Length: 118
Length: 441
Image (cartoon, rainbow over all chains, first blue to last red; front, side, top):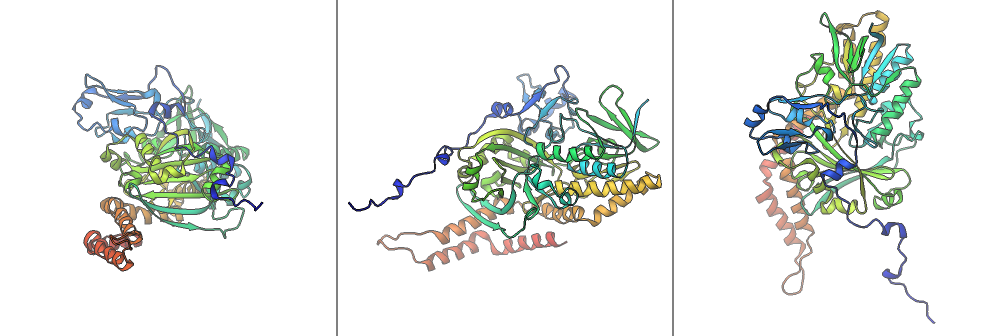
């Protein structure tokens, strides 16, 4: 019997690679936060809105679109709330606020976010 | 009574640790403050560490598991929504152990390695301690105030090594508010078995690749760039974008990252990956006008705190400049210690040495190019598209109605037409001239 000619589909595929051909896994905001270790300093927010009146007059509200963990939300009454316990301490809001209306400091030592890779 | 030391360093990143190492070796009492659980626990960078300065002090670093892979390929890519035009430079002729002094790294690992070296030399590392401000007396810095009971530490010199946000430089009056030219870096570390990474990126052993992406498909044509760096069994994928440009785009940073990851070109490289860690950090890209003063009475500013980054699309450097500035600051402080004078004048040699070094020269040269880019958005939102269109026209294999094929001459003419009509040779020429001017002066 003549030797069987192997076509491309008959050639053995490496077994390891086959498990890693699916689309990259994407994370929503909450899942992204879940990849981080965050120790919350309960009851002592390190970020505060200085004057809600200023936020009410702010039209752009750039804090709500530039924070990498979407910590700034405009409530129904027009006030801006900071979900500070999710903060990853980058400093974006401090610079982006056109009115310097955010009192910004780092969480106290040992609190806040910890990177395992960085 | 407040504690006393010779030098108080705020921060424990690469610049801080190498400075602490040199100062401790020189016999000085050094305290290094880290606000996180360990050095690197609050740090993030894109991913490539340039090791010229490092290798002089710690020649054994490649064997110490503190870096990931040495770079053998730099690839620059222009993306439209569905196409890519790339230029790759592979360099296989650099010798071990340092190769081309370019290693991918993860800060939570590398910073710990370097801080340990400083500790072994005798520096004291205090973790989980935030320093909010300097203590000033009669117009000079005399110490730092840590946020805890009895947190005052007096020192002859304070080194502000607290990174991009540098509240210390600001509290000492050496810098104003950060400008909107500051870049937000957003990244995910995604995992993939090392043999899959090596197979997918054509790497052997510990070789690594650094891919940079520009154009509409990367960060929606904004001034900014995406990146993809291979680590051992993870990939760092992310982008950098000036805050001003991010604000103008009006898209959430985490959505923009997912968009980049799902770009048809990028997606193929990230198949089968699982996100392990999301991160974001500022890159202190500033004009010389916005930079802090590098020295004051009793204080020096180094690394990212001093705005020392080269964040243009060609070169992404910073940690090497931080380490260089740390070395120069430490050596100046050792001299000042001998003379017993810690005034701004006595510390000034640090600033002048810095300005003569690559750290300042590269910053200065390339920030000019970045300023040019700010006023020429076409380099990000027009030309990448145009070049991709040209390539697509030239390389289209097009059938004709009669069952034959469009001759190459017709394709060449279509390219020429496009260059004349769409690219605008005149304006493109002028833009190139601007770029050349910015690069040269």
